Length: 279
Image (cartoon, rainbow, N blue to C red; front, top):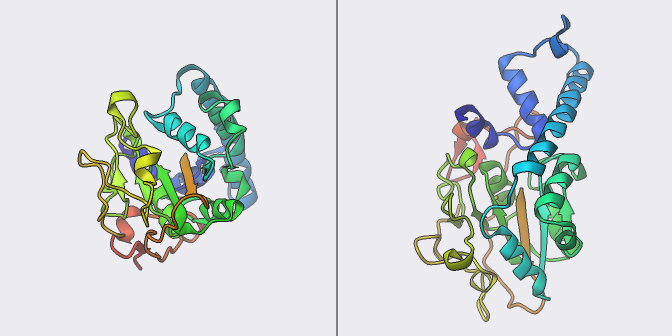
């Protein structure tokens, strides 16, 4: 898992991960044959075929074992019930696998009430590029200062920061490697507690967007986040509408520089303060 821990926080999307791995470790013969892909067309065909096969295995796993992280569905339900809150899901995954996950875990009824649903196929540049979050914000016609992103990886965090949106991290074991706060996250949840459910609730809509506040709140108590957090999550996207106060506190504007393929970041080549790739 250690290699994938790094990969998950370096490259956004399944196909870009494959390309990154093969570019750095060598391209194998095409499905056990003798021909190693040499042209871009051959490489794309191989990656597409592997992705299709992986998606079929992935859908079987989702049907049998996948569950939402603690608190995610509860917070989505709170946002759906609030008339002045827009909520959506923005994922770097390919649409076929993504739809299988959200239909199985989130459910068709919830999905029908979301304001934005976007997958990696819907954008020309995947996370950590901020494009998907910028497009989501445009669809609900709100400024980034009224948006909060919930992510689970460094790739997602950088996408949120590139879109000038504050970000809360609810890590999974495979991405619980970086110091997310050092990279600009406003709060980082416990890997086992997540956003919290029942008596373990940590983040609620009322805490995140408190009545009368001039900025989103990130002091959730219990050591999770702080209203004075250092400036610096398949991601959920929430934004406050006209009924909420006018939030002025967004994540600082950051300079995001992509790798040669427009997607890849290497965590070891970043300045954590400037959030830009070192040369």
